[in-house]
Image (spheres, helix red, strand yellow):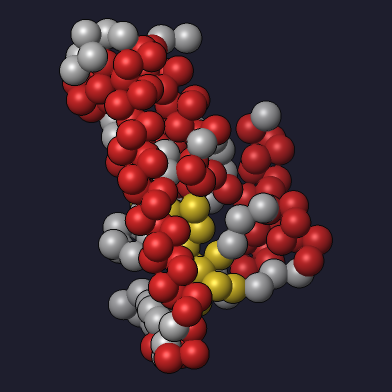
Length: 169
């Protein structure tokens, strides 16, 4: 495994510990230039540098989550542009990721966004799989690393993802 691949793998394993920005925002070339080249190719030093940033990001995320929890009663959740969608318990358990409702497309069709990890651990592979069943990259700022699709039957769409994942393995 190359040093860039090792950093990507470490970032996926620590996704919820502040490393999500590496997974979602950095290309392999940027990881090489911004971290490995900056540390003269030293993988351990590059991981430490990213860890320092990830730690700060995780602290900020925790502060934001704490603020949200403390102010839950004063927020108007009906006005949020994205609402979590609920699936049948078994389907939700198999899928492992949530769908979120976003604004309708220009024809009025309902649209839903889901994180790329619902398809595969590798973004490029996830994108190919998602595109194959009609999803496209979600470019809204409120949901990084997501794919969007229109659907009138969300259970069916979730089952398509589950089947696609099992076929891809």
